[in-house]
Length: 209
Image 1 (spheres, rainbow, N blue to C red):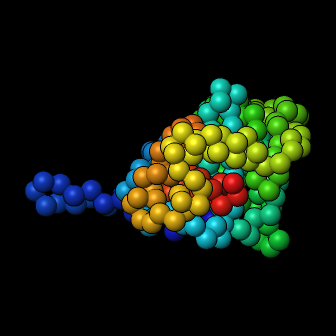
Image 2: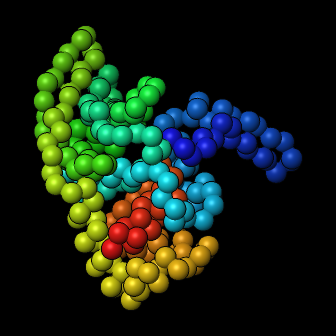
Image 3: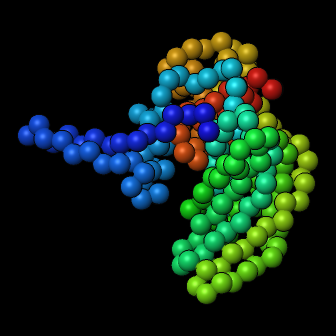
């Protein structure tokens, strides 16, 4: 991924003392929660769209957005490992080097749709068992144009906000971020990791609308 990854978390106490913790040593859920916060979002939303986006939808309608490096070309596969907790692993192909993995901890057995360069509906496939480790693979069934439902939801959201896509993209800095956040809230989108990712995705939809 092209985003810089945090390496340390520094806690500063009232008495001036500090404690440094390796970010990678934090529990995965805590890492995700921290990276979702506005203070971890970095600069203002990017309107250049150098990277690509991944959207995941769950059976309950929950939707998360990730922004990944443009070098990744397609979805390689999705599977869930249980030992004993469930962890979903979404793998991406790229022309050179190792595949990239996104790990999912929110109800990984209930992911229903993956949109990247193509859109897929998931269907449970082969299930393997090795001792206490269970692995559930999923078939990727093509499902039309990627992000099609989100593009329609975006058009409805900007109409409710009373702003045209071109006028939205003409905004800058905090004004742009605030309006993008209002729209993504109406659309029911959340950040898979970084809040800026989902705001960039909404800006991407504005450019396509």
